[in-house]
Length: 148
Image 1 (cartoon, rainbow, N blue to C red):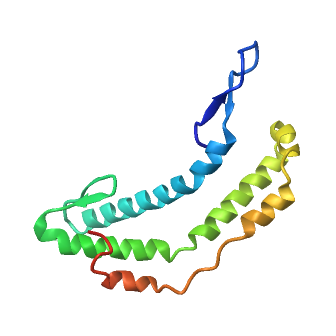
Image 2 (image 1 turned 90 degrees about the vertical axis):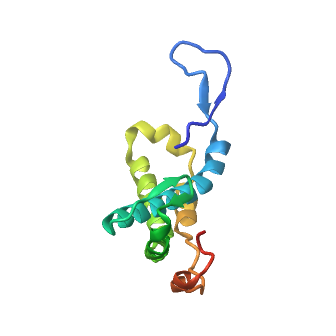
């Protein structure tokens, strides 16, 4: 959950002055998920560079190593991207979100909140995972400008 809140009036005893801004939270989820994949790719690249015995430094999406090791880092970077994206990432996310809804539905502390949720429609939506396209991920290994 993202810490996006909106002011909801005066503070009264026992009630918070802020409530979650659901629109901002919904809008933040997709880009934050993509950023999490980017950072996972970076961490995998870093780990495999260390394993290969080369220096790896990064700032956000900028990867760096010594000039003599750039070809090795580029190969590792591509390998980790391909390996990660061959995993069923959206399917795993779907299953995880479904399990969260199931747990929330059974939590007595969330009973009131869950009354407002059409769980059947939500579950149907969460199960709608787009089919994979026809792009061959192995082509990334030959891509000159995949990551530069």
